[in-house]
Structure formats: C-alpha cells, structure tokens
Length: 319
Length: 274
Image (cartoon, rainbow over all chains, first blue to last red; front, side, top):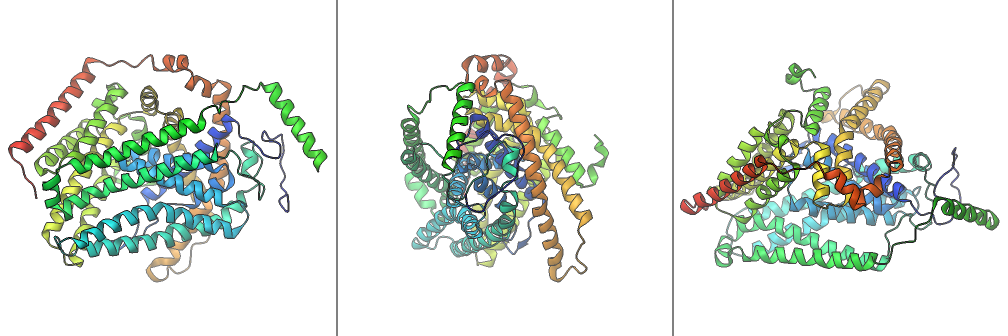
C-alpha cells in the first residue's frame, strides 16, 4: 500500500489481504472483457485498413482494450473472455468463422493476454504496460509467423517448384510481423494503454464491486494449481502450433509439394489431426487432474460475511 | 427500419444491418430449422472442403455454399464485407506473386485455396446469420459447450447493436468537442492521427459504461440463480425442452449430404487438379 489511494462509496465485496473473486464477479470480468474486445473488433472491421502494396498497414487489433482488462482485473478470466468476443462478435456474425483455425487464434490470444496480464504487477507502471503490450503482440503473432517461415524455409530446400513465392511469403511475413509490432503493439497498444490503464485504475473496479489491484499483490482470481496450469498451458501451446501447421498445410501442399501429396496422399493430414486430438486429450486430462478435489465446501452467505468481517478486522489490527 | 436508406453507407445503416443480422429477421430456410440441425449442417460443410484438393469438388462445394447463402437471405452488409475481403485477397495475391516474379501456376494454386476458404465462409455466413442469439446459445448448451461460452454468445449478440450505438454517440461527442486539424498534412496523416486519438479516447467512457451495464446484467441474472440453473441438469433440461428435430431438419441434412456426396462423385468422374 504505497501511493495508491482512491475514493469510493459503498461496500466492496472483495475484502481482505488476498481477495478472491466470487462466481458472479468472474462472470462479470469475463463478459466485460468479451464485450469490449468484441466492440473494438467490430469497429476495426468496419474501418477499412490502408494497404501499402500487399502489406496490410491497418490495425490488426486494438490491443490496448484487452490489455487494460488483464492489467486491471483477474488476467485469467479477462484473457479467457477477450478472444471469445472477437469470435462471437466478428467471426460468427460476419461469416468469417473458419472452424479449426479460430480455435488456434483463440488459444494464442488467450495465452498472450494471460502472460501479459501476469507480467503487469503494478497497473500504474508505464514500463510494465509497455512490456505487456509488446508481449501480447509478440506471442500472438510470433507463433504463426514462425510456423509460416519454417514452411517457406523447408520449401526453399526443395526444388524451386514455384518461383517467386517463397521469397515473397518470407518477405511479407517478416514485414507483416514488424508492422504489427509497431502499429498494433505500440501505436494502438502501449501508447493508449499507458494513458488508459492508470486513468481507469481505481475507477472502474468499484463500479464492478471489486477492490482495485494493489501493486505487488498476487493477481486476484489467479489460475488454480499453478503447476498443473503450466502443463495445460504448454499442451495448449503445442496444440495451437499444430493448428497452425494444419492451416499452413493447405498452402504448403497446394503450392510447394504436389509430388509429396501424390506420394503420401492425405495420410499426413491425419497425422496432424491425431496430434491435435492427442494434445487435446492430454490437456483435458491434466486439467481434470488439476481441478480434481478443488471443490470447496459451500459457505453460506452469513458465514461469508462473518469471514470477510473477521478478515477486515484483522487487517485493521495489522495496520 | 427504413430499408430505403440502403444506398447510403452510414453508421446508422450499419447498426440496423447488424441488428437484422443478429436477430435473423430476414427469414430464410435455416431460421425455421432446429438450431442443432443448423449447427450440424454447418459442421458438415465446414469440414468437408479441407479433405480434398480436387478442384471440381471444391467448385461444387463453393456453388453449394453460394446457394445456401441465397437460401439463408444473408444481408448486404455481411455479404458485401465478404466479397470485398475475397476480392482484395485475390488482388493482393496477384500483386505479391507478380512482384516477386511468380507465374500463373502460383496464382491458380492460391485461387484454389481461396475457393476452399470461400466455401467454408459462405456456409458459416448462412448458418450463423440465421440463428438468433437465444437459439444459438441453446444449441451450444445442448451440445454441452461450456456454459460461459453459450452465455457469452447470447449476451454478445444481444448487446452488440447497443454497444455500437453507444460508441457512435460517444465518438460523435468527441468529434463535436475536439477541433479538427487545420491542414490534413501529407497523406492526410493529421486527420488519421486525429481520428485514431478520438477512437482511443472514446474507449474511456465506454469502459465505464459497459462495466456498469455488465454488473447490472450479471447481478440481475444471479438473483435468478443463473449460474446454478445453467450447470444444474434439471435447469438445462427445462431450458432445452422446446428443441425438436422435425422432418424438415432431416430433409435438409439428408439433401446436404447427398449433394456433398454428389460433389465428390462428380470430382471422381471429372477430376481436375491444377
């Protein structure tokens, strides 16, 4: 409790030194994050992005919106909600829904936001906000860029089956990544977030009945069972890489390796599907193991109030 | 609902169009079908194109997608964005590969990929434009999707037009209060910066408004036992009791499967690979 003082009216429902979110509050954070990022995406969808040559110079995401959410609220629930907003508001409604690769995008964005939200320990620190914003873009875009570049690199070792394309993809992919970091990560990520996060800190949380985050405090509503969560996250990351490969597979087969297709037919595709199924099963099992026995005894409202009051009293004594 | 304003591309029109899309008010075949059947129908058409590289089959599936878009009466906004997207994609591919000395073979390969993506997109447009939020979330619930997802879908579809309207109001407020740059500058960069700044600033009130809205909604839901009703099997059963698979659903699904098989048969008879 250093220099963060805020004013509020009414009682907050998260009390104590290490506040835990109640189910409705988790739902609130989830829904708010989803709605805001969805809105940001629909605005971007309507605004045409300027192109310079074949490179999209437009803003790919208003990253500052979900970044604000993960910096101010529980990163886990905010990160879970934001990419869903993109899918629900834009992809389903606008007919952009592309099945498997949507799932890949969801997982990537979730991981990126969750990690960024965990990095930001103090919502008022500009340095941490910058690091967080760039982390989101790098994690989100890096995986797909790396997969594409690997494909091209492998393609280059083969006979020059199609001239011109490998270089162009390599060039465009690298350029696109740089443009994304500058435009989405900095211009519409770090710079607006640098202003928005401190402006909202201490104002938006009481509206939702929560206590603002205090610098250095453990993240509220953190993911349960950290060890297992890491396992699940890694499995998700691997799974999402396979999704990327599946997506890239079509370009690969279609463009570079027609002979390969004739030789092996569709069997390689099934291998990729099998790998995805395996990682999904592994992460489900890990998740199940991780959450098993997490069920807490039902605490009645009176008990909860008593506990909260006792904790608040203890806090006063301590202070 | 002034339909005659269609020719003017205004924010108002986009908002109305979004409401029409979200609530599936245009009618069409899929609105009277059972939502579960619509999702299964979509799953068939979304997965099948990924399993073939035969151009004849893909062309057949593309035509199938186009027919379903017509049957579902997809609105001009969604369709327009789709066509613009596909068109620009093709143009950029042409430029990119010509710039780096590619040849027509490259273009044909990428054209085939776009055929595939187009077929999938059209199926998803037809399906999701025809499902209103309530039906879609019930269908997801009946497939045992996580209840946060089904709630998110129904909330998102409902709130989207309201939020766009709110954003529009706030944005107009900023436009009125802020002075536009005197000179547009090189490539109108001052104007672009000005608009970008207003868009970012608008999010501050939107964050606070939405936070209040969300809290009101969630607390209203929770007083009615929302979380428990969603996860409790009895509540789920009550909510899904109205879903019925009718002969129409079976007929549409059967026709689709026959047509898909027909495409593959046609592809086997007249195979075209690039």
